[in-house]
Image (tube, rainbow, N blue to C red; front, side, top):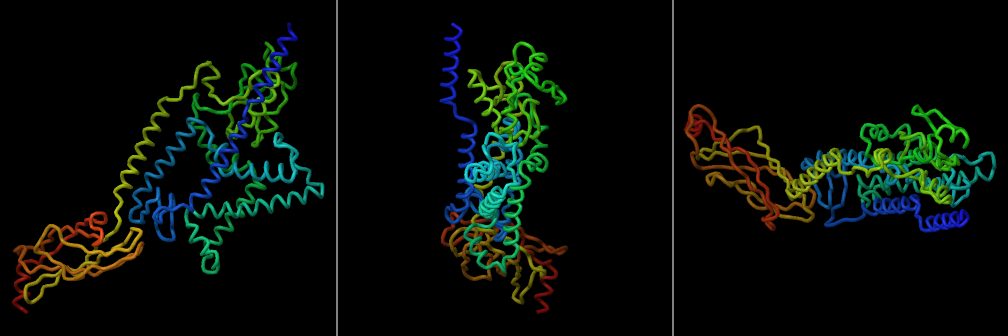
Length: 481
């Protein structure tokens, strides 16, 4: 009977392992999606606009295929709001899931260590043991290491260029690098970033995640008992370390003496050997854990062969301790969702109010000019900018005072896309608007500026003033003349 039961158990374990999809393969799919999206997105344009582009060269922000100029960067606080609350939300919900599943640092290390060094060049023997470094005393390994660095260097320059494309669009980037002497800042930034990626991925390695990346420190204050993370089930496997991280057991006998009731951990240390940040998940939560779940894969293989579920799981400490489900929709999560929804709503609302032309109005140092015939003139500097993607003809009118008219410019003028045009504007009146003997009188006026060829879509309103002179000055000036 025992043999039959054991055989059923073994068959069940084999069937489970046959249908089991490791987290590692799922991460590879995620890595591929992130890589393709990040490489392709800068090339996609709709009406000449990018999905996201913070272009310092042309002083523009492209967001969701809408172009905003520097005068319209009131959207930036909402973007930062979304960034920070997005980080808070993701970390509170899933810990450092970003680090293990989407972070460029992790993707680059997997490409270099697992693909180039292990699969292509066989410099490393197997992916499942990341603790053993290649023996660099062998000449053939030195050659392989050099080839690996050269291959990664090519990819590093591509990755560095891809990063720059979100600040300098690809169409400009490739034009600029053909003339490096006149674009030294761009070339220096590109080469410097590529060299950093080479040093980071080849030499700094996961030490960047452990010691340099600030996200590891942020996570410690954002976690709670219901945060999903990589957790070792000490109730089944037994305690390997005490609460201070000191090793309690060295062999199976000591494990049973400390825990009793036949703890299930085999002490194979497969979960330790596979860890890219060189930690032992059995110690409990650690800042260095990036939630890659490689240890869960390793334990699943070992325990699956024994007909048992993995001792390392993607769960929360609340679920582990109580046996209940993780409380996903708790106060902090709901609060972050509300703030993110509010930020997105405001962002889209503000974005929908985008003006397809910009107009700044400044007065000149001369308040007014009085002509001999009693005409009063005010001079202004109008700065127009065409923020649309095609050429338009522009003009303007005074909305709320029919007695104030335009002398200059006398007819509409054209502006090509993205360009600014400064116009000297003269408004005048041949009427006596105010008889105030105490002071000059500023009269509020509203300017309506518009594209003559598309006045419904492209129109803006600006408030300014028309200064009418003090009445006694006005009379003396005319009499003098």
